[in-house]
Length: 458
Ligand code: PFF
Image 1 (cartoon, rainbow, N blue to C red):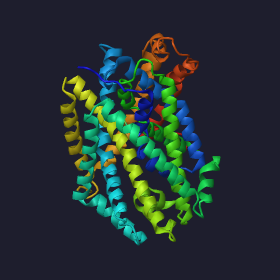
Image 2: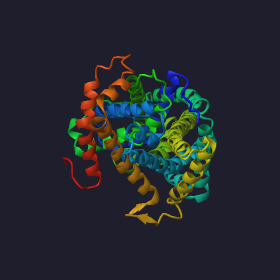
Image 3: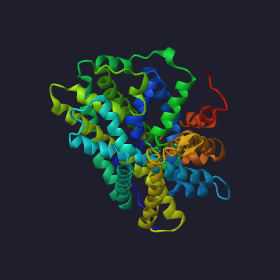
Image 4: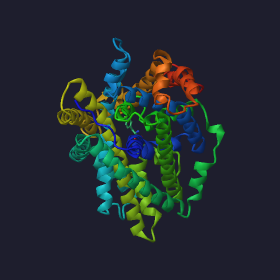
């Protein structure tokens, strides 16, 4: 089967950044920052990005680009006759699961975009927002149709292929996303009470850092950079031979961190402006669906049109960010099904869309009719989220670092990372050292802690 490549270097960076930038940046990052002490958390997070994120991203790029195969096929080629291809398979399964529940939240963002365009939030009270969110998430018809709509949107981009689907879409949508972010940051930091929010993001209180903050920062770095499931490995299988893997990983990580921090600058000044507290439910997971619509309404009481535009742009921003991420997860599974089962891409994509929608259906219903169904005390949605993000992603990252740090021949790795010796990679030794020792130990600790088998520091 003829395999496509991305058409340009910019396309490569924007597509990979599209995967990385998502609900994880605009929703999860501010929530984590709020719950883990503000600026101090951000500093630990950035250290995690540099020490773990960039090396593991480079590793995924290496695995994909050196084989030009889907996640499972890539390991089979690099380690024939071994069980390493199960790392790829685990990644595909993780991508499948995350796509199923992520599309449910993505569906809510689409519902909120429609509601904000229709000016539905106008004149509502704080309790109304709780009711609106319950209606969107617990009403099975609304929730399921939004999830299916989102899955179909993702599907139609993926079936168009790598160059005219994923790359073209990312090249239009990522710049649009950056523009919206900048506008929203400017609006938010110029609100009258914004300075407290800005200070919260810029003045670190190092006494807040403890074991659990470090662990949350690492988990967030993984999720946010789309690491550990072979997503960026699949994208890298469409890179050209002369793509600089280190530079690309560096650029994608900078874009991703920039967007996350800017999301903080949109949300915290606005939240502080109307006097919300960071403790308690204002900054829980309901932040963007219950707290923020209220914040938007109250921010510009003398100029309601600004409240309207702020809300419309913010929810549209979430839709775009989520879509470029769902596309990347869909691609991981589609490339796997298509190549491993020798199937045309369109058919493989339909199989992925239909099966993921089926699983997504249960996740969507777990906020309504199936809310009493529990697995190990978790709702279906929370169970999928917990298992995939907190267990499968770190396990994937751990195995990737062991695979490159310990299993593969370093000469071969160096050859690929330096594009056959044509580019200088002065940090190669440090890269290997991190993969050999730092990453496995650090990720091992997250994992043991998540499973409650070992309490790290606190
Ligand atoms: N990085 C995405 C986000 O921050 O929302 C989530 C994600 C996308 C995770 C793709 C994993 C993945 F393969």
